[in-house]
Length: 234
Image (cartoon, rainbow, N blue to C red; front, side, top):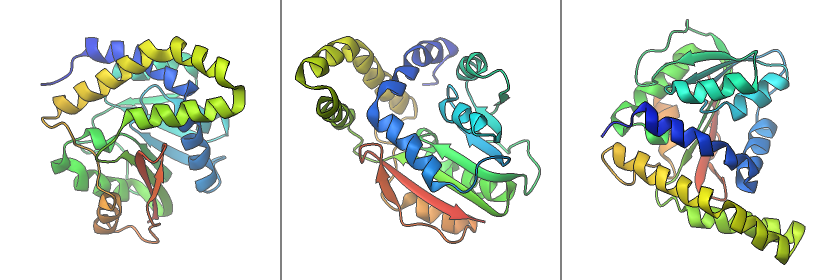
C-alpha cells in the first residue's frame, strides 16, 4: 500500500510538534556535538522531512542540501528557511550528485522506513558522494520501537523541570497529537508490507562496513533509547 500525497500532507501538519519533545531536542543536540566542524561544510540531509535538522545546520553556517521523497515536507521547510536547497528524490534511486561531493552526510530516522532490499545500496551511494575523509552520521529506529517509552521519557523529564501540575496540563494539551503520531507511524510501517521494518542493534555498522566506510563508531542508543546512532568516515 503506497501512501499518497494526502496522507503526507496530514502527517507533516502534526510532525513538527515533535520539536516540543525532549528526546527529539536531545537527539539534535547530540548530533551537532558528535559532528565535526559544521560552518562552511557542504552537507546532505538525506531524508530531511520538514527540515528541522537542515534549518539548524543552515543557521550554523553550513551549505545544506535537503533531500526528501515528499514535496509536502520540503514545502514546510521552504517556509521555515528561504535559503534552503531542496531536492525531491527517493533514496532507492541513484542520487543526482557527483562523486566525492559532500563533507558530511546526515540520515536521521529515514532508512528504517525504506525496504531492507534497498538499504545496502543506499549506504553504497552515500559512500560514493561523500568526500575522502568525510563523515557520515546515521540514526534509525530500532526493532521493538515503543512510542509509549518515548512519551514516558519526555514526561518524566518535563516533570523534573516544571513539576506535577504543569506536566499534567502539558500531557492533556498534546495527547491528541501524540495519538495521531502513533497512528501515522504504524500506518507507514504497514505501507512497507511489514509491521516491524526497523533496525537491529548492529545493522547500521554492517551496512557502513560493507560500503567501505572506516573508523566506524560503536553504535549508541539515542532518542530515549528507541533508536541507534552510528558514525563513520570515508
